[in-house]
Image (cartoon, rainbow, N blue to C red; front, side, top):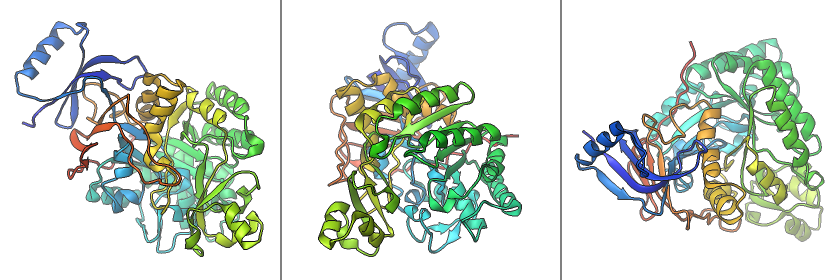
Length: 493
């Protein structure tokens, strides 16, 4: 029998949002087999079990002054291809992330087959779109054996690109039916639900009839709907109402992706958007994800150039030499406007310093908000959130600023995430749950990735178990054993 692992005398933060306690966590066979407080409150049966386990020569790891928490769940990723091409998944594993949700913003590898993906699918990288179904993608993930678990949403934009020759109009009846069939296959294969990104030109023409036709299929299987709404600038309130209406009409729980008030004219408007979210949540299940930075990252878009915000170019296909420079400086060198420089640099990617810190704090503090990184692993100079989002929340918003309690911060990365995305097996430290566990030093945990040097491991994440397998230590980095898998949603009857 596999040797038991005894994580002893740590500060246990179990993911429920309840206060931490000093205790022990026991792992065996890919499962958590026991969680015990050291305050003497355990019942006689628990004490007897604990004594029996200690007699079986467990591998004891002293976690004094360390935090034991569920492995973090990154609810907003674009790791679809990274899980196959870079299965060590060091950017996520080194943060304590044990499960990622791919397929966000309407962008998923399945069910598109193409050698030359258009934007925004190109955010996932070139030459990757070879999976005609979610089942094919799931099988590829299991064959690749990544070091973290992969769960997936099916992307609405991917469906449009597969089934529509003309993306400038809403889908017709035959196209809606074809999309719905792919949605059914994906849900049968274990997808978590549907994502959309009608913010992007390729999906902007989609109407509610088109979205509902696909979303209702996900609803029949118990899925969720995560959406990059149509407008995060001046029209954000109307876009939130549109998303809520789509989800309500479809019968799906709603997740507002990377909720933010973007653009200088929008700063401070979380004072309007968050009360609207609260009001909508009284009528339907609603949550949101957020990353802990004032800059976003996406494809180059001239409509986001306002002459006020800083824009850091991370990739330009026609001008690769400008990667890492700011658009303002490039435009000055070329003697043209920032708008015209952006057009000349396309296609490419950039970081847009669109948000204000007080807005970011309000969203992070909000009880409906979970943490997601939204990193782009295929970007040559990625936004630092790819490597640092989760330690940054703990370092900045718990330890340094006190915006969150430790229990709240961990809950937003674990238990809440698992509950909102219907992953019943993960997100909590409790007997019977999957043994996805992170041990970190609360005094040292800190993101190191910056916009200048984004590919930097965080410090203070001391050990990470994925499905009961020790997969990362701060000293050794990613370990050879990869225990991740495609996390399938239970198929509804």
